[in-house]
Amino acid sequence: MLKTILIDDQEFCSEILKDMLEANCSDVEIVAVCHSGKDGIKAIKKHQPDLVFLDVEMPEMSGFEMLQKIKEKEFEIIFTTSFDKYSIQAIRYSALDYLLKPVVTHELINAIERVNKHRGKYFSRHFGELVKNLSNTKRAISRVALPSSDGLIFLDIDDIIHCESDSNYTTLYLTSKDKIVITKTLKEVENILEESNFFRIHNSHLVNIVHIRRYVRGNAGYIIMSDGTSLNIGRNRKDQFLSQFARL
Image (cartoon, rainbow, N blue to C red):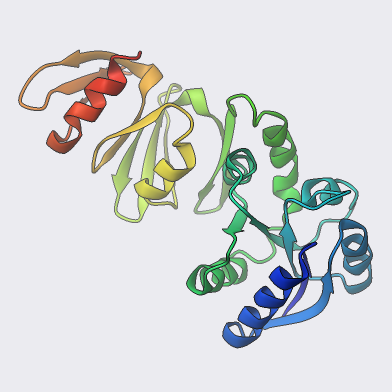
């Protein structure tokens, strides 16, 4: 069983989430429901949970501020938040899980499945990266954490030249000439990097536009990247690409 604490200043949100968990996630045991960061800290110290659902936007003490006051972060965490572009970007780039409010049942179930799959890879391992990313949310975030088969890889975003789909995996091509395979689909990588000058030129290719060196006209055309790689542009993406390329 996953000993679980819910922390949200809005009581109705906590009640809805509690009902959804009890109805759909039999492996979750809710040991406390808190409505402030202060009460959340006390509950975490008392119950030593396996999992915490934490609201990002709370008065007096935000979810992020609450976490900074906890020394031992030996639990998994799922952030819950209304749409906040900057907070979500920071969470995403730190390889942490989140749910948008209002929470959807199948997304909640998938989040619990991910917790069970990666249980033991404590949130504390990601926390330093999250703090860095939060400090950069009004500017461009410069680093990203991505999952590999044996853990996490932390990369400078500018070092990623392009990404290539490989079924349920994605291969990253780096300025160091290394190739790294990560356990995310290209679509998932695109969602993570959408704010960082990456463009999907083809079903199989996502490119860092700062590494494009040349566009060559043709049926749909192709581009040459900074490492010399030539990549075809999908016909249905040509017009959007040219519009984007014109801004470089």
